[in-house]
Image 1 (spheres, helix red, strand yellow):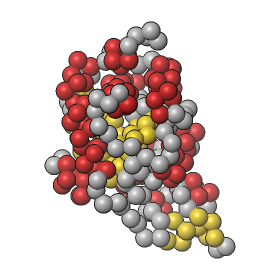
Image 2: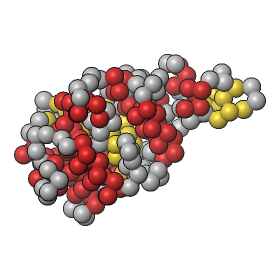
Image 3: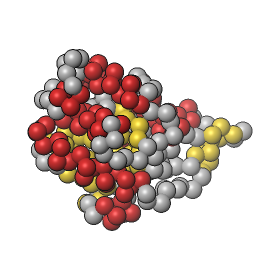
Image 4: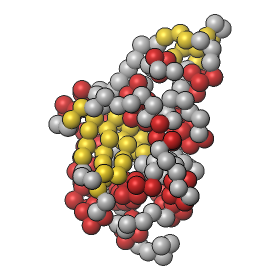
Length: 234
């Protein structure tokens, strides 16, 4: 696969994790999980289970097309393979539901990058039977004319909604031959979402726990100042 043209390698029915990561490092920099500079408007995530190969390949192809000037995206960082174990040795959805407790190194790296960039949009790409886009905020659902969902707070889209982002969940079918149909549409949705007003949450003082510092809190003498709502679920 290393010798294939990216369009051929990414429009296939398998995912070569090393290939994807090498390509993202070349195009965006950073790594090993999240690729980007840390000031992007969009953070795109994929690759939580072995069934997410179309999501990983599609996201990687989208980034490749963007960097080639073939589609237009807002500044975007990407973590196309959040759970590498799922692709190389099996593994379930544990990483997908780890964005509040942050037990895994991968979820901690994504969260650390998130608080550095404070992206306006978090786009979670998942495999699916049919192409579907949903949003977690009223503003995004209305602007993009898609269904609004209430995400599980432990998921990446749920944690992002508790913080500072409009989150989108984009399901990509297992049909690589159709990727080209979705590319410009998804790029357009990401541009529209990135143009929405930012999400803000009131600052509260919570107990001095390390988990709150990992979620962007600021240590003070008698606790931690937190400008998001994760404390409601931890």
